[in-house]
Image (tube, rainbow, N blue to C red; front, side):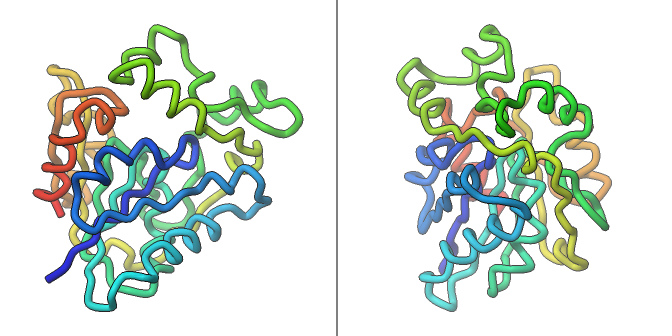
Length: 228
């Protein structure tokens, strides 16, 4: 059986956030959503279409595991519904979870008004500019990688964050799991991990911060293979 790991990056950053892990997984596919910066709403069909196009060249017998990081987790249901082949499983890596039914907000509601105030010319500043320097610097293994990730970030239209993403019925009729990045005291006990457990999903833990896939891609790749 051939398995391809489809590494779905948050549209707030870029595909380089998955590049080190992609080099360590067999048949890795890393779609890019950087074109969303020049798109108009609705954005969620473009996310689904982009992943569909990225997996289309895979042989028909290849099973795919969808692996979503951060904000990309909100789009997993529409990707499952669109890709045109069965998904073997879905893994959420320190990711936002989609609503259980109905519609999913494209960003946490508490962030919407702060982002509206930050927006200039209808566009929101890049993700790295949302945070204090002290919080940001610890996310990256070194200055070179930080520079590459930050240089790639898009300035998304504010309308991206106002969107509501549909949740098709039956998208989670397959094994799903949640991989937590956290400090020693967390041990996977946060709200998102608790939500995943309530849904009956497998929950695993790695000590690290939100971009831990850049810091320790070997451990993250190993855990993804274990879960998928």
